[in-house]
Image (cartoon, rainbow, N blue to C red; front, side, top):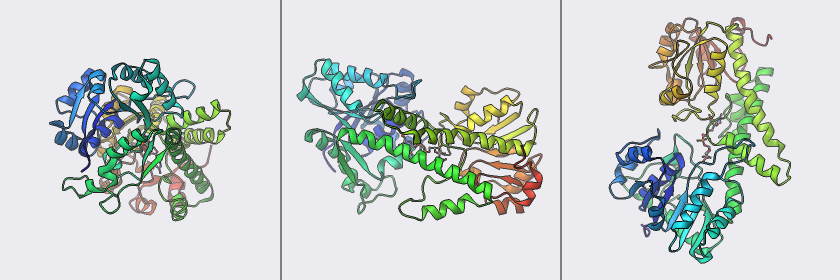
Length: 470
Ligand code: UGA
């Protein structure tokens, strides 16, 4: 393996914590910094604040000698050659990214620099942030030759974050100086050389000794843009297929067939063409808005992104209308809900379309019984338990005596339900699937009234719901 690098990662959210664990897994020594004392205490004690495959084992394996946790940014900076900034960049009222955390961290790092450091943006930030960090550090009196600022955007997805990090489609490094570029390249050497994949304990995934991930060296501005443009493009792909799904519904075609047919074109590709209730999470909504805002600031017309956002919003309303078409009235109806997270495989509920739909159901007077394998604790903080909002112990308990069951997150276990048991448990065998987890034919055969997204409605279902009627 390559020479280990001493690394500080500032921020222990999804990106920071996963990056810290994975850098340690790659052989580097890592100090993870967070100003949340309770979180640092939890991490030091062996706890893991987020639900992410492989993360607990990686942290356990490395906690003893490769990853430390601290609230002291000054000490972490002084002990590290490279400092990754992975703090939050929340959405401000105008849609732009709020960079105040990045600014504060950059100033504090600057005040602690006593020898050459590379400061790296890992958070998703708008173009020119690199430039701003450089200015902030200089304003704090650090000479130009004592630091570089680089950009190394992260493309991991929640739920598969560790595998995405260690088996990336590409590694992007934006650096203006050769010294910074080379140091960053050396951090990723265990992956780009393929050596990591030959280790007996390596996390399995798509890359291997013979097919290591490609590394792309760019300017810092290009690296910043690659991240924003990639997320905006993926969100656009989802909104595109969602509108195609709506056209499919209108003409009686199946969007699953259409997306398969489109995805086989290698220029389009099959991924991120799943129709549903719209995208959510802490990234796409925020990043589409921030990228649109960047374009506006530059007087560039990027109204396409506005459309992407409004289609995404509309998709939730359309789904809600579908629920209405099956239930007719809402007041006092019992609705089972499967899934509260913004997608399957994560406990994250930020910008979750599922939560918006549950809130709407409650507003209309429904009694909701919801189940999610990981997100219920977090959901309770936003929608507390009440006589109208119950949290169930499993999918069948959520379905018990319900007038209809809604599937709102694509957890694998929701695609593998015992359909006979479900039929028996529901008051009326109505399933409204916002994630197209089931085959329509199978659901009809098993006696369900089944509504999904972008698929033709069978005669039986049409008779059972007020489809298309206002
Ligand atoms: C997204 C990107 O996929 C990552 O590459 C990026 O690093 C990350 O944002 C980030 O910027 O940090 P993530 O938000 O974890 O990752 O989740 P995705 O798997 O991309 O899903 C986002 C949303 O789109 C979810 O609500 C999901 O259900 C929805 N989606 C996804 C669809 O509706 N259809 C699809 O075909 C794919």
